Amino acid sequence: MKLTLIKAITLFGAVGLVSAAQASVVTATFTGTVLNNGVQTDSLGLFGPANQDLSGQSFTASYTYDTSLGKLTVGAAGSSLCTAIANFGPCQRLGGGPNSGPLSSTAASPITAESITINGKTVTVDAKPSGSIYTENDGPTANPLYSEFHIFGGSPNGNYLFFDVYPASDAIPNSLTTPFVYAVPPSPPNYGATLYEQNTDGTVFTQLSLVPAELVVSVTTAPTPTPGAGLAGLFALLLAGWGVRSRAARG
Image (cartoon, rainbow, N blue to C red; front, top):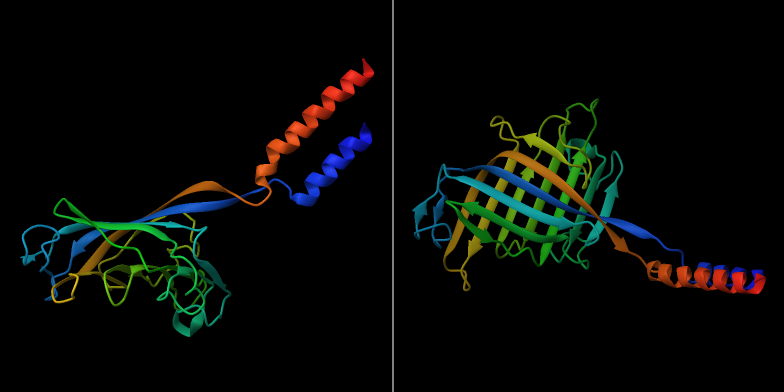
């Protein structure tokens, strides 16, 4: 009977141990106002009557991304993968789709949803074909101080929603999955943010420059089954069956 149990354990181990990788679902929310810079007109009427001037209006933009999707690239300090002055770093980039860069162009976009709300009207922006999230923090001793959170979803040649905040401080963690809140200072304007939506033939478009005032990143971690995880029940049954047979033999 001991041999039977040993064989069962050996078989289970050969096929694969039970494990569950942790994939994080992350929500990044930006709030702020629409900038008055000459392109603040809603020509498509996405947020009310067509051709409305939206300058000064409040917005809430939200992204959801899944770390089990896309391709993760990690850059060490000094790596050319990091974009700060003198390529300091370290940094992380999670991306997927044809416009996400050569290292991730064949992967699926990690951004699963994105939207923006203005005037009480919410527009869902197509997060495909490309999406990327980039973080960097050069550390508290860097000179100059630098950190960054960059997120993009859509197509540079079509509809997209883009935010990039890069303070001269170490306020933003170099992590794709660390919750944080960052109040974006109005000056100097260490940020860039744009919504671009066009009609089907590209003749009419709404392009808004956005001024972020706050970034909130929240994280939900959910287990993602990996190969071998489905064998847990089989192994439990084998152990139960062995126990019954062992007791019967002793009885």
